[in-house]
Image (cartoon, rainbow, N blue to C red):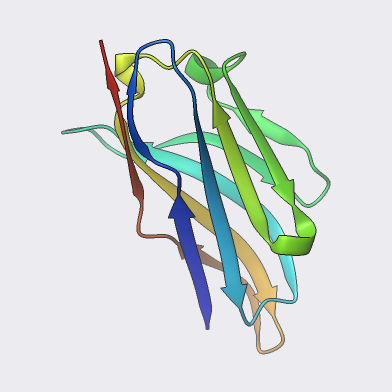
Length: 120
């Protein structure tokens, strides 16, 4: 019913920048929140940044001042601008979409993830 597709990952040197995109499509009437998570190698998945329907954002402490989360409501897309990247930002980045459709109420959907690798 709902597809979530991330893009924009890649290999970058420390201090560089990347911009991730996450597009949601399918049977969606309203998106309540779009959230970025990441899973570093050998570690658990953690919340990175999120944005709600009122454009309020939240960030984990380790990315505050470096990452910017924004959304384009018309495109059902959320972006994560990542600046001043560090090797510890290396992870698979996942997008989660909390949405409501015509036949369902507030379900959570995940994308397949996009790899971000920061070299030192």
